[in-house]
Length: 190
Ligand code: GAR
Image (cartoon, rainbow, N blue to C red; front, side):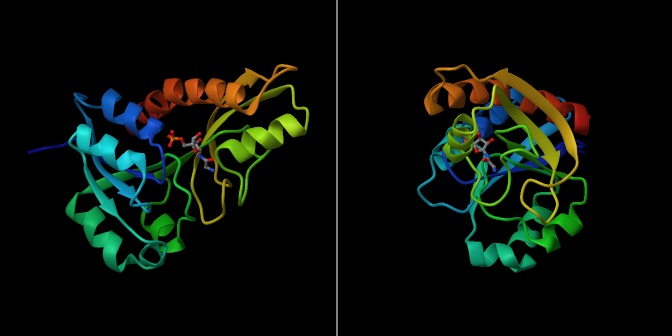
C-alpha cells in the first residue's frame, strides 16, 4: 500500500519552483509530486514535468470554473494537497471548499503588501521598487477564494537596495522561494 501524500502543483509559466519541488521530493519517504496542472499549453513547466516524469494535465480557464474535468482527475490521482507555484488563474470556490487548508500559494512579496489581482511575477517587483520599499520578500499562505488573501504560513525577507533593478530583486526573491517552499511544504504535510 502506498501511504505517501500526493501533491498536485498548479503552475502557468516557467515552473522554476515546480522544478525545485519535483527535485526535492523525488525520493521523499512520505511525499510525492503526483501531478502538474497547467493552464498554458506553451508553459515551460510542462517540459520540466516531462523531464522529471511527472504527469501533467492541461486545463482551460473555463474548465477550471466547474469541477467536471478537474475533480475526477484529482480523485483518480488521490491528491491530498495542492501547491500554487506561479499559477495565474483564480482558484474557484468549489476547489477551495474541497481542499480547505490543503491549498497553499507562494507570492513574491510581503503580503498584504503588493498582492491582489494583476500582482504577479515582475509586476510585483516593479511596484515594490517604484514604492521605494527598503525590504521585500516572499509569502507562503493558505488559499481562499480571494487573490493572495488566506492565512499566512511563512514570510521570508530580503533587502531592496538603492540601485535595485527588477531583475536583481527577482533573483533575490527566487532564491528565497527555492530555499523555503519545499521545506515549508514538508513541515505542513509531514
Ligand atoms: C514566483 O515568483 C511566484 O511567487 C509568483 O510567480 C512566480 C513563478 O515563478 N507567483 C505570483 O506572483 C502569484 N501571485 P516560477 O514559474 O519560476 O516558479
